[in-house]
Every structure is written in C-alpha cells, then in structure tokens.
Length: 147
Image (cartoon, rainbow, N blue to C red):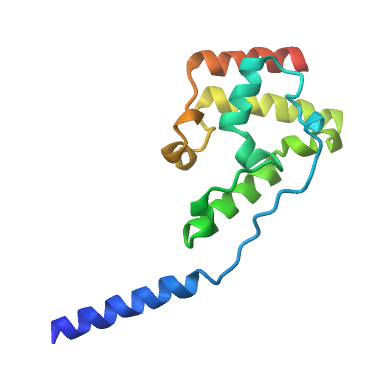
C-alpha cells in the first residue's frame, strides 16, 4: 500500500515539475548603449566589480544562464532581476535625476560596505561575484569621486 502511494506521489510530483516548465517568465534585456552605464568611464577594477557582481541584476545586460529557463529557478531568477532593476538599473542611469543619482551612488557604497550586496543567493553560484575588501574600497573611492 505504501509503495503504491509513494509511486502516485512521485508521479504527481513529476507531472507538477513538467507542467511548471510551461509557466513563462519575462527574461528581457531592453537594448541600451553601454555608454549609458554609470560606470562606463570608471577605472578597470571598478568596471570589473560592477560587471561581475552587479550587472546581471542591475542592468539591461543580464546574462540568462541555462538554469534560468528551468522552473522553479526561472521564477526566482526573473523575480530577482526585475526587483534589482527596479531598485537600480545602471542601463537607465541617464534617466535618473541628479538627486536620485546621488542617492543611488551613496546606496551602492553603503550596501557594499554592509555586505548587503551582492545578494547571497547570487553568490552561491557566481563565485566571481565575491568581493574582497579591496574591491569594496575601490568602488567606494570611485563613488566618492563620481559625486
């Protein structure tokens, strides 16, 4: 009896996982010239930090890995990217008011220093996004000069 229940449960779980693949999520990358990125003219080490640790969630230049097409990971990744872009989108930097740019620059440094960014989930898979103290200081020094 337990074996029959286990088989039915496994079959139901399999059907659920297969059906979940048909729930589509938006994985868009609106086009924006790279020159619009706030850090386009930053020093190479700062650009590297932004490219490896920030760009995937905070720009329109997201690289969507293969697992971003597999539910339920696709839902989580798309949600995180859309949320990240809504908080700060480097690709839309030129649309922000000077006051908003100032606030965003201050928030970048603050979140890096506090260890709030990059997000822990992102760091689990993207080891190159792990920042050293030197990386954090380089970004904050650049932020100070960009104000």
